[in-house]
Length: 200
Image (cartoon, rainbow, N blue to C red):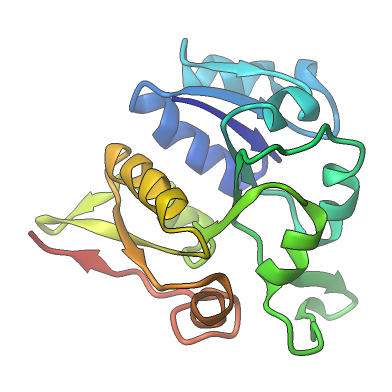
């Protein structure tokens, strides 16, 4: 499968590593341009290439891995989504003088806010509950596979993403719709930060 990643920080790099290792084609992008990603692409191997944000966003499955503050700029001026899958890996943290602060979104889930930025996309919330160092590890552990939670409003889309999650070695757990599931898995929710392994 051809996939795109918008954002080449620690979460984006971890996901790109798993995708490329499993033979999926990955277009990695960031705000600094493809040339800044040469060393990462060399590390990922022949399944990966650097591209512009627009090139990454044109893939059938696109992972949004920038910080919350970077989202509006990263998602502006992109071509119409036309039903492509957008995977929201973000959490609404912003940096201030005392460190990271979780934003109050006025009762909305973070993915409801992201959905407004990607009109026409099939949005799924996933890959946001694990810390980057955990996400980057081998997903098979203790005789099982590390769990990736996902939420979304379209069953076929979630099935497609669940299959991809399975192919790269993780175990997908469907939490339901974008609102009810998102509340459980977003930062501050009961599943945030949990590192669970599904046994056979």
